[in-house]
Length: 436
Length: 167
Image (cartoon, helix red, strand yellow):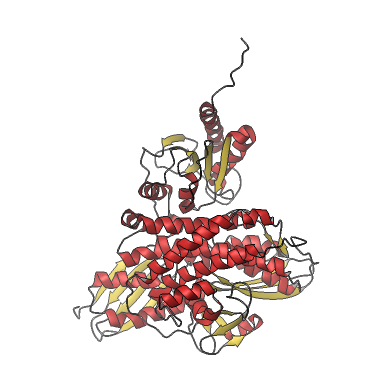
């Protein structure tokens, strides 16, 4: 690489959810500036929740994302139930976990097969990859289909489920209806195990980083809906104290707020954080596969997140089958409560990581205040930091390869820009040495 | 993977969003057809999961309705296309799975041998994609025309008019 200043621009980085851009200014020795520019217009969800009925929050916030609507529903209803001191029964909790399993399967498989896998096999798109590796895409689609089936049965439909409400579900399926899914789920579970082995065999660039991993931790289960917020650096707080430890800050280059840990700085949420902080609570079957593959925590190379997603899909199938085995229809599909003036908050584990909601409601049950912190906005600063630290190790690469590597590094995080503002143009600016 | 028998009934699929004015013409039409032809066909409202189409339409006779904006076409024009023979413009946005278009779904379906047996696409040229749940007058007229053509298509393949012994 010459010492002359130059700029590389990629107008839209492919295979991420939403639209944004990346700007990197560097010279032969240093990376001076990395900006993950999110320019999707703000979507004002928090503002237009105000004045709406508390019962509407799960369905309105579900519209933030077509990939992870269940996550928004779960965080919203747990926050409302926190405000109203409504404690769902164990049967209802199990059904919510089952719904989340469906979404993890759908969302992770979509990212693994359609967005992430082409990177490792050198294809520009999943359609191009499918010509040479049809079996990978076929398997992924079968797996995703099983997740869809779960959402259809329990959620009422596959995208933006309509069966979720504060206190439970509008209608709960019968044991026989769940039994009808067993064969499909078991077959897809076998395919998911094959996907784990395939993903672990991919060639991974070396990029081990030091992250502060943040996730829910629950002594009884791999986290989805409940737990304390813990980190790899010793943070251990109740969800109620989230805003005492995490702060959102505005940056000029992004319409999404950056979230930071007040005591330290950037942190990472998502599959790697969950895996590293909760490995013992993965199913026995998943731990057996991970051990056979030599894939043990901590995983600190974001390129390997594709393996973690596959393992989480496998776990979701084990969980789904376990829940169906033990399913007893709840006596009442939902619990009711009278609204009152109150505040409540909750965090659940969206496929992309911790999703925090806080609401205030008045005596009539109208929303007076809403705050939503999406996983991608929490990871933005970490993505920038990862690129800043990764690039010096790859400066020997031709610029076109370097640009491709930056795009891949961003896809490792499966950012959902539509959620965070809700991505991507890439601008690499190569300065003359000493010009910065 | 399971080898289920492929249903013989037509599968009617709508694309589009109820809450985006003319973009809702697909779901609107599907509701009307459900009321008029009922069990003669299967109905599927697709909220945007284009990848999911591959599993839903494989081997089926499919009729798909969507609102479109095409340069040179007036709002309310109805375009009937053979989805397996005619070509579609690629997605304008390839940055995410949100931008995975019908053209990509057909391309991937071809590669994975997951195409429908027959794919008739009714594209209704629309003008208003802003928030709202009302169709513009021209689009509503085109929906009526599409309803007649889809009904005829489904009835013809289900044996046409009922045969009777009456003279």
